[in-house]
Length: 67
Image 1 (cartoon, helix red, strand yellow):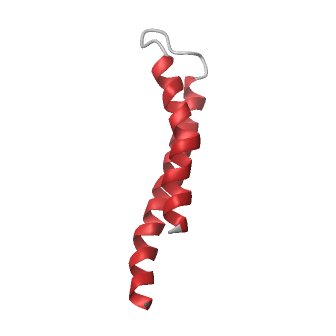
Image 2 (cartoon, one colour):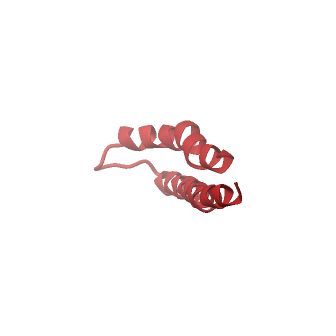
Image 3 (spheres, helix red, strand yellow):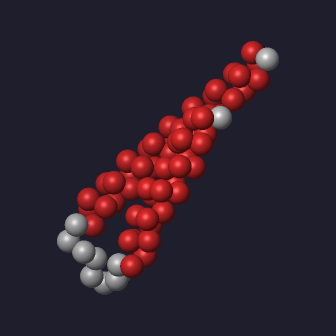
């Protein structure tokens, strides 16, 4: 349960969503100079969310099997 909450939910809410708001404020014709850094940060956060989801996917059934 902790892997699910810490991985995708908390990271999405407090880190990824503000980045999405920044992305949406950019003009398509003229992105800012530092857009690559923002893209890379977003990619790292997606990796954290993916690992958290994967861990939850593996650990939750494993925990049920132990019960």
